[in-house]
Image (cartoon, rainbow, N blue to C red; front, side):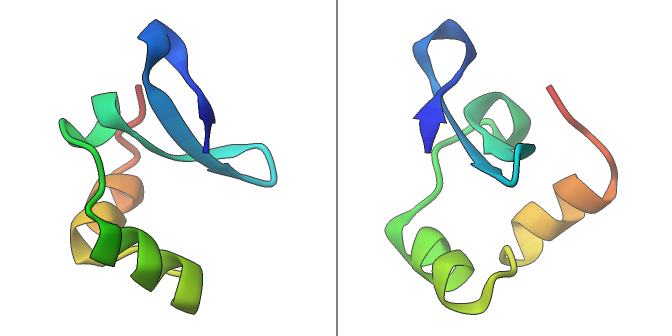
Length: 56
């Protein structure tokens, strides 16, 4: 995680934006972060947004 725009946090990997509060409208839950860290893949809700190309 890194400080993002407007003082919010963004999640990036290899320089690519993977998550921001602006993108999802909320912060990720602990279980979502744990799943992502464990599997390397976002849960379905994140995958839908990322797959649709919606980025801040």
